[in-house]
Length: 435
Image (cartoon, rainbow, N blue to C red; front, side, top):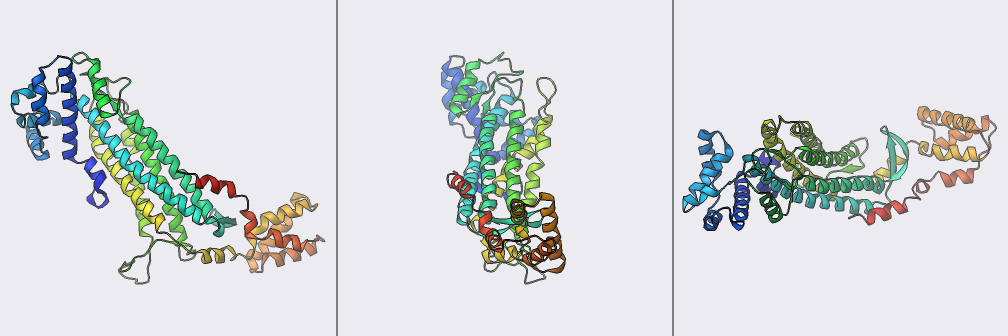
């Protein structure tokens, strides 16, 4: 992922220097387990433990010849070991995937912890914003058309719970990828005791794989990437709400616009939803990872490397992009500008058409058949759409023409936006309890 979208903590997780430090840690843990069991000389552990990780540049230099990254790493690390002879017992009984998959599990869980912290921030931002606007009346829209009155906090609550569910899916996916496999060339523990795998897993705070061949089957990693894609898409749903709300014709919501910020190189009046649009674009990047990573589940027999190159690109990119998206989206919500007066103006802009559902039920409860009531209300509503005459006036005229008596006092009561949202108290109680 390009540096523009890479935040420091997540960038460190996926840096080559950190990767090689993890490889050293895994190899050292394996060596310690061997030494504890008496399978290798005890005096080789300390020199290996003290050997600094090789630099990415040195590994790359050796790999130009070996065309094998793990062998290049082992050679470069052995060069850093004093005495070098102690390095002979490094990687004892292991295959490359034992190292790669186990270190990758650490990277994935570390990346997940970074993401979970930002997901918690987003959930809290949405919860607090929703509660702050539990009484901010606006018009609800279906198909982009005015429907019935709602409160802005209700829409935000829906997004808050979605963000929380997405975070919890990621937490579950952390367990799916947090597995250690140190089982040898085709996973049969032929040259390494299963106790080594258990010891390494315990030291890393992970668990041994239920089974592995030369690799861990990629269903868990696919689950993890899918969880990231869902989180990214929920971020996009939040951003889309802001983009719609910031349209000139709507102007109910807007991104914060800082002093000195410019919206257009040609049009000085412009204040564009650039953060929301960036979220929408980057969510596509994360979703794009699902299929390539999932195609790493079917491999030839005990192992091939068709999944490897895919994962080198998509796993860091998906994690880095989701990290950036969560940070950007939380900031968007925390600084969102809400125009409650404009919301009220828009709600009233159709001359009362938003109350047709209550009027329909009132007429039915007054004795009209649903069919007759619907026809009367729809005819009056269509006249309002076409003429701009307020709905109550067209309703009175149509009712009189049909010899239907209207209870004006009752209509005054039901044609109030507040009565449409009177039953939302329990929803906001649930939102307040959201953590």
